[in-house]
Image (cartoon, rainbow, N blue to C red; front, top):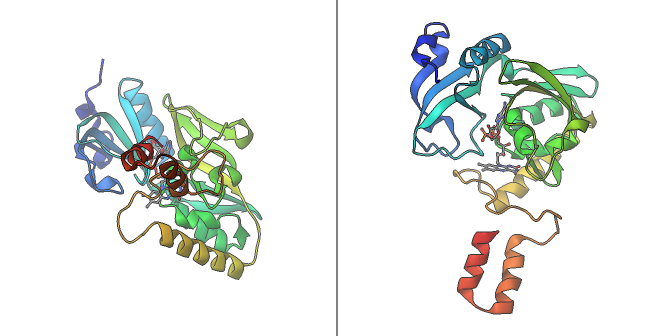
Length: 260
Ligand SMILES: Cc1cc2nc3c(=O)[nH]c(=O)nc-3n(C[C@H](O)[C@H](O)[C@H](O)COP(=O)(O)OP(=O)(O)OC[C@H]3O[C@@H](n4cnc5c(N)ncnc54)[C@H](O)[C@@H]3O)c2cc1C
């Protein structure tokens, strides 16, 4: 049986909203409402909330919403957004950074640069949060989250906190394979000592390169096509062109694009 979320409003103050419009909460500013929207300010509150709703409500964790298309139909569950205490970032030791799940990829990249740590440059080109980046194993320019991650701290929907070392995660192309039951709280990342000015220059070059293929001033969804798994140098339009040349029939070429 579902629970009466109205009863939880006084307990969770202004952080729980019912019948909440998600338009302002995603990259494309689209979509409809959710039955409930919960802003979790810290771990204690989040665990308390998860224990209250138990398994009785569907839960969706929203990062920056840059890889999420919100449907116009109402979501019959709770959307959880991590805020405040999940937005911390610190240097744990010389080469290890610990960042909360709500930290943006760009902020992590800048923090690493300020601390002369290399390996995080690619993150400056991905518009999302650490939580979304872990889930998607986000990456570009041949670098992915899995290349910099050391471990993840997460809480399951029963409120148990666990630490998962990266060796136990079966990362794939744009997929972490991690359970839908997990809410990522924070992660440790490892970089390597590198001159700040070199990092700065590399970030500038990567941004320029990305800008040439994906305009960043307008709301696009980034890459339209999934890259080939073997990461060949061939771009998808080159594969399409060859396919079209073989058949020389334009509508088949268009269909091929749709099936990629
Ligand atoms: C213009 C543009 C360019 C892009 N370029 C790239 C690119 O170069 N490379 C690339 O890989 N991607 C790219 N993307 C896609 C997107 O930015 C990444 O997938 C990003 O990592 C998503 O992060 P997010 O915080 O926006 O996640 P969201 O879209 O909010 O969520 C994505 C998934 O992660 C889950 N999730 C989010 N936070 C948590 C959490 N704390 N715990 C558990 N699950 C969580 C959500 O439930 C959902 O399943 C691009 C997107 C756009 C719009």
